[in-house]
Length: 304
Picture (tube, rainbow, N blue to C red):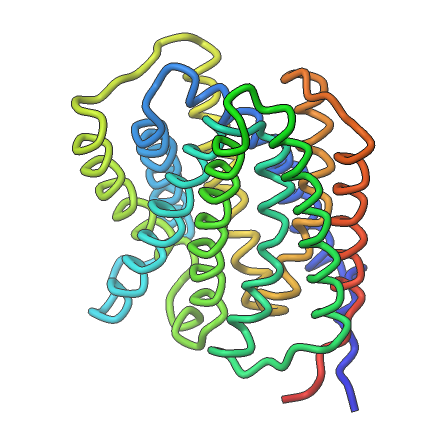
């Protein structure tokens, strides 16, 4: 027997998905502007300093007690390192080499490691339909790579580097997703834990930024400061509690289905604001990636 996929029309799932998808679909373009004049690691640091402070305020409003035990602090540190340090440092650097739309499309493959890691660490079996969909999606990503490699002024190496950095980010983000689906995650209040994770991540980000890029650098341009606030408040403090709550509800593999629509929004914005030029190869790659992810979306998860 098999377990049907959760009803995506449930408001408790649909509304958070819609909010997360719309906001995260736009963040890729904002990140592109962030890395144009400020070292990536400092931009990441500023983003999660804003997000962490916002989470602290929200936790206080909810009257969460900041009384994490040793395991709680270790859990928050693991989330901070994997999600708010490694993941975003890889993503920001990837956007120095390839367009924001392509980064978003590749990141849609988060579904694959989420499903694999769910099987390994959470005991959730992978169905044949999920495997087929993942293979189709990866074929689409391969076509997008060929398209980018042909057009990149710096040659295939630059494109490969950008995609490699994005794939590294995916693995780190997936690790954080799996952690959020464990029984330990449910022992601690969401806002309190995320506030701790973001502030720990900010501290590590700052050390990494100083080591890699020297003293703090910031651009006081309105667009840059506005971007920091948008990414910190809406792109992080609002969306991560929603997304992680969905993960705890339906599991990391199915929660990653929201990534099906995010690249569509990101590619559209990249076309409008970055001058991204479509070709038959790129269109076919995008369609294949979308079809593969939709096939996976419709998969039913076998019982354990």
